[in-house]
Length: 612
Image (tube, rainbow, N blue to C red; front, top):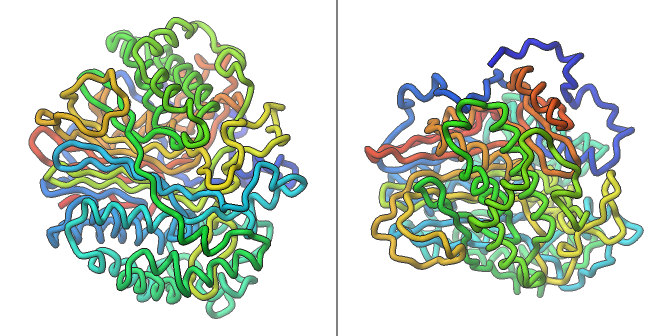
């Protein structure tokens, strides 16, 4: 492929600094600012050959286990827990709690997410610890108050993170709960260095908010501006209140967060800011255990989480791609990219009909169809190798679901075969912009992930009824955790959590942060690892594209060469350029020799993929 030499001014390269934010539709503004972009060295998308990164095993390889997260500090906590005799679940919990300290702009105790766990016998558990709508929530609660779904108490869903971590630890953990929680409390108390990543996220968060809440709101300022000036790159930042909260959690368990003084402070602050959540909403929250979804792919089994997360979208894309001949994929990389994009558009189109299975009972049946070999064959028959198609060809219902935003992913694995792929979020950067004064907990604005009746997107498409607000409902999410193993069983069943796994061997763990780009990024990294045998480092470093059908735009990182993009334009794709940093992937691979490789996002400066 030719090197991309086109100047920024002539490529349509999208740079936030070049945009007049005041003139953008709010929905597009939130999409652009969801993950603050970073600048990294461009990489070529090389589906037809091995990159240099494949030629030798990286130095961060070991046989006892691996951790990949957006923070080296937090990944080291996970590694230390493995060294103390813990397993991948212990390492995940310790790492994720730490990420909630350092990456408070998109994760923490005030949020929620999904975890996919593989035990040592090869059985899978999906933990849905997604935030839930309060009992007073209703379909029309944001009528004439759309901003209420974004900022303030009415935007807050019941936090689920601690219930999810608690369930996982009780069922799978080895080390004492206190030993797993306290390292994060220590980081919050002693402090951490403000990184380039945090500075970018702070800048983006302030642009979204439209005011300097980090210095002007007393609760935020206590951490972010203790001397009246916003912390800057290289400063040591502490979160003393949050440290005490974590210490309480370490001593008394998750119940201390959902009942008693901490819960009372949370509810009081939410209600002071126009929210309706109650103490009963907090105390009654439970993590939900769901069946995994899976496919076979060229001798592997890929397992993920289903609705209300989006594992089926990723797996459906890969199942469609599996039917194309590998040799032809290597010989015509531009055609392969077009097919990949088209496969993704069909999968995102089906995504519109998914929702919380408790409220959308057809969701599991739809997922089963999406993952079937016959459906993949049908999609391939509908893909035109010469041209892309109008949006309605992929999405007959002509509906859309909102784009979710700030997220963080952790991947862990250990030598016994236990592995975790988990993504957590408070939704928009800094969530609802509410930090509970007594506890330092950043509260989510996950209610914005529901569809709102009557609110069409900027292209005129209607909101998805499958994702309307209901009391207790969990909004549709782009979270896509994936674990790969060598397939010992038939893929005809996509929802079996217990099976004979004597021949199963852990191969890889992957997942991403980045809103709707979670799906596309995870899918591409897995494809590079499995289809082209890229190392995790090579796969993560490859340039990425994103096409979620609506808006009808294919966005390419500025690592793709001009000839490739020209071929996509020739096929009718509405192409734009974006710089790197709108998604963040964490990936692990276990080699045939039993050695782990861990790769954290190259587009984040402070990320860390470590092994033991």
